Amino acid sequence: MSRAFVKEQEFTDDLPDRPISPHPNDVTPEGLAQIEAEVAKWREAHSACVAADDREGVARTARELRYWSARQATAHVVPPPTDSSQVRFGSTVTIRRDDGREQNFRIVGEDEADPARGTVSHVSPLARALFGREVGEIVKVGAGEAEIIAIR
Image 1 (cartoon, rainbow, N blue to C red):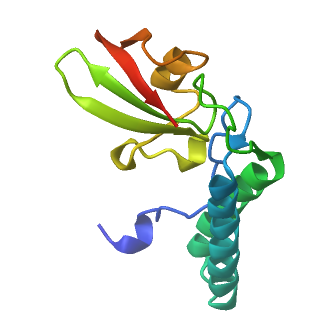
Image 2: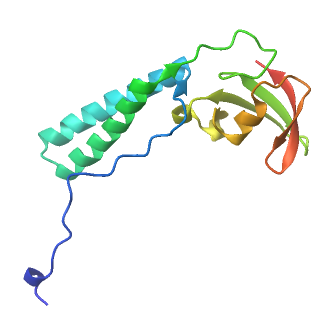
Image 3: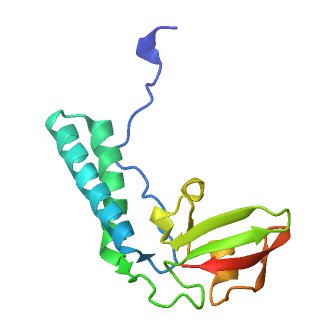
């Protein structure tokens, strides 16, 4: 069949927005800096796509820019905790799991969370289990339990 009779997949200029979390957009000061860097990065990328007349790139970068701009507009910077008697937003917590492994996690905003790098979102099950707890307390973590051994 001739390509003339096959309808090409047409590109749409509008991509659906990235979903935005319904949770409060609490961030650390470092998290706000990361969001600001993303806004600047996507603003620059968007300008480059506009200049190159790259419709797909314009749509993709506009979508990212809308997301990061919304996150920047709703960001609520939570200062580092001054008291380490209880787990709070921004705390670094050391836990000892049932199997003896010790792990450190810092509780941060959703966009800055990276469990592989030791940061977890304040809305994660782990963070929610830890909030308000003190050293020596046992918390449910996944299928097991863990003891809080340090809060910084």
